[in-house]
Image (cartoon, rainbow, N blue to C red; front, side):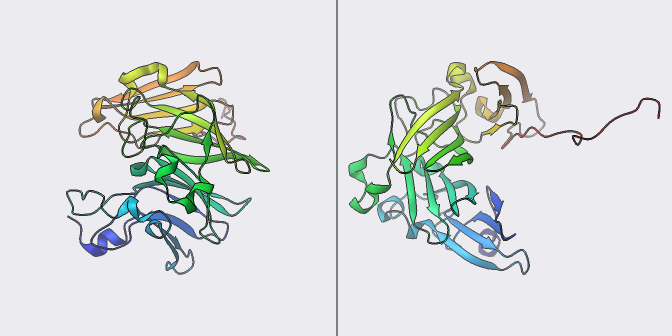
Length: 283
C-alpha cells in the first residue's frame, strides 16, 4: 500500500490545462478516510497548489458521511474520473462515478450551476433542488459514467458527451444496470434546467459490450464518435469502435490476448501525420 504522502500527491484519473497555464487535477484530500474526491489547481510556474476544491464541502453530508470503506480503509464515495474547463463561463464539468452524477460548477465561486443524477428529487436537501436538471422523455440516467466533456455551447445551451457504463453504483438506473454500455450526447438547457439525450450508441450491442468500469467517447472532427468499450468481458479485452451520426460502424478493433491486462482506459483518434505533410516517393 502507498504511504500517506504518496497517496496524497497522486493524480489519479484526469487533468486539464486552465487558461492561466495552471493544471487542474483530480486528487485525494490527503486524509486517512477519503479518496478521489478533491480537485487541485497546480501552478505551472512553481508546482505549488494554489486552489483546492473538496467535494465534501459542496455536496450533501449524507452522500459521504457513512459510505462503505474499501479494502484500503478509505471511503471512495465520489470517485471523480474526469474534469473539463469551460472558458466561456469559467466553469468546470465534473463526473462522479460512485454517485452516478455529473455536475457543473462555477470555478470562480465553487457554486453549483447544475446537477444531473438519478437520485430522486425529494432525496436531495431543499437547497440543492434548484440545481437539478429535469430529464426529458427517453433521456438516459447515467450510471458509473466516464469522460464527461463539453462539445460546444451557445447561450444557455450546452452539448456534452460522456461514456455511460450503465452500472448503478448508488443512483443509476437499476432496471438497465449491467445490460449494456454506451456513448451519449446530451443537450443541457441551463436556463430551463433540462437535459435531453440527442445521440447514443451501444445499447444495440447488448451485454457483450458492457463494461462495469473504464470507457470513453470522443467526438471527431468528421462528426463521428470514437467509443472505447475499455473493460469488455471483465477486462479480458477492449473493443474500440468508430460510428457515424447514423449509428453505422466505420471502424472496429479489439484488443485481447494481452500478457497482463487488456483494458484500455481511454482511446483517442489522432492524426498520424501533420495536415501539411507530403511524401515524395522520388526522394
